[in-house]
Amino acid sequence: QVQLVQSGAEVRKPGASVKVSCKASGYSFTNHYIYWVRQAPGQGLEWMGIVNPSGGSTNFAQKFQGRVTMTRDTSTSTVYMELSSLGSEDTAVYYCARPTPGTSGWYLEYWGQGTLVTVSS
Amino acid sequence: QSVLTQPPSVSGAPGQRVTISCTGSSSNIGAGYDVHWYQQLPGTAPKLLIYGNNNRPSGVPDRFSGSKSGTSASLAVTGLQAEDEADYYCQSYDSSLSGVVFGGGTKVTVL
Image (cartoon, rainbow over all chains, first blue to last red; front, side, top):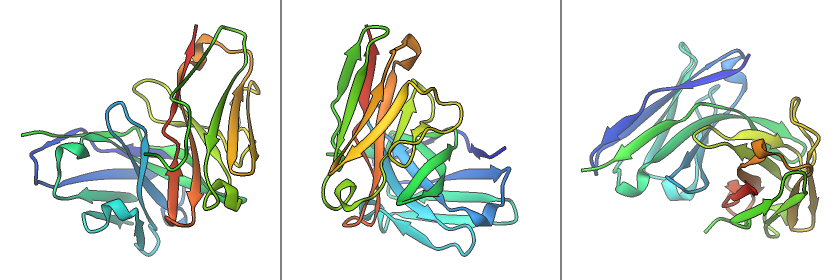
């Protein structure tokens, strides 16, 4: 069965960076994109970007461009999301998700369990 | 501000029917992009509830249904049950933003 297992909770100081991992199993890793979505406490879902595990290409939401990096390691079927210059507003649960193509648009069929990133001085 | 607009909350008694609206624009729902819905129970990851406007994944009760018209979509829950108390999010694609967009979420309360 498809599984996305994320790394554990992180605490960072303002201005630092954080790298979250998402290990995929149960399917062919390079055949499916991975999305990253975050959720601030008590808030809604926010799309951050997408990484193609096959070639490593990425596409980011404009809000995060210049501050986010998404990479993959095909040898371990793991994707990484690194966010830099953290501020308190980056405190959130970060999810990886595997999209499935629909008739007109993609939907997020499989989700990781989420990683809480807390930014605090 | 979310690109897709949902009511913050809806409520209903057990057994009743509730609907959640999701309003977009000509660059997302109105452009013909599919709308998908997710259910999020407290402290858990979102779960796919409806995909492609009106399709249920295996295991989702037929009490949940979706529809889409023009620049809006709706999620209906009939025969409301206590276990349906959760947050619900709509999602689509926006061509102007070249990315995925979500609604702000709707909290369903079972009275």
